[in-house]
Length: 308
Image 1 (cartoon, rainbow, N blue to C red):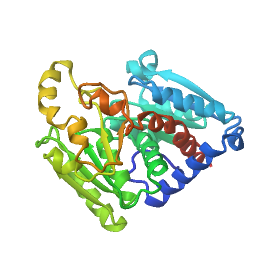
Image 2: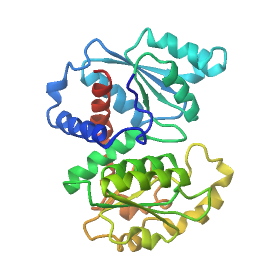
Image 3: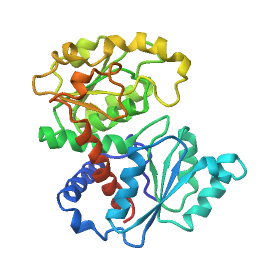
Image 4: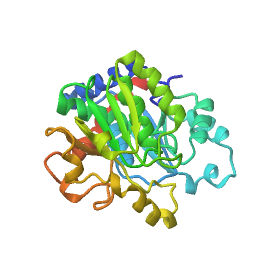
């Protein structure tokens, strides 16, 4: 059974194929108007969502299929009255694909283990592969290529988006640079860094982690940041984290160290005045809404690929 659990386990060839299909779908959407006819996607949500629900549901509708929104807070699975395995075995009898946006990655792995239909990771505390596929599509659209580009990530390195971005970037031959505060609570996981070094050796890319924001962003083609307050971070830690991350805020002064034609990205939602300033995210170098739109096209490509 083919799943999308993490870009760590997807080959560069699989990623490239999905990106090529996403490009074709975006260019010729009518060609795929019935590509998912009579197919149903179950969308399991434990975490809040805007882009994920809208893009998956619209994607299924635009390809002639149907999507079911299912919140765990109103289900036997969410209340603990039914095991994940029983719920997923049952759901697999009714639908063609399952997408889940969860807190615990281990729950997603359990779903994939018992599902008899493809399972898609729409975000867990470990990774966010669908977002990064959309990101890579946006970068290639703007820059014409992926291999050889420098992608600088600034902010919270101990983050599901950061880890997925590292995997996707190095597998595509990019030079990924992460600028985050030192320490296990803020820097990328060591196992992810080591895996990325292995992938980079095969692709010609590279991975670099530093606590110096200027060194991280210097001569970057792409500058990326994400929320300092992920869903799992308690509100009472906000003041401490803001103080810790403020040197990594992407503002005009920091952007000046990137290439003059660098693009700025944030997977959204964004907090102006925190991980980036308004002049950056609302400025001419920002492609955040092009990036967001590509969630639709990239996920259509994932749905079609996994449903073959």
